[in-house]
Length: 53
Image (cartoon, rainbow, N blue to C red; front, side, top):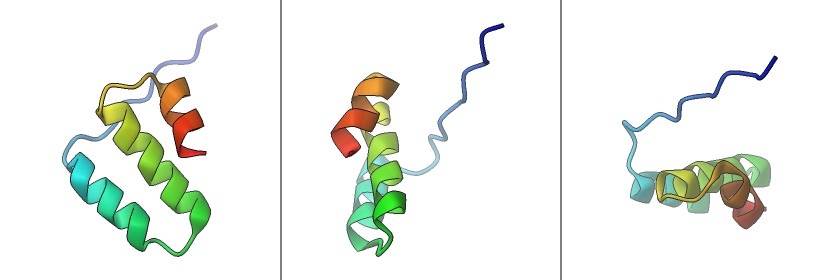
């Protein structure tokens, strides 16, 4: 059985996510924020995750 897709929130702008990532002290959290921003910019989830580290 294939897992259902998770929906990405769109109530926070890509710019805000990137700004929060720059200010975040926890690298893992910053990478997740960047991955979400990348996905909202049109990258596939796999590409977004690779680009964010």
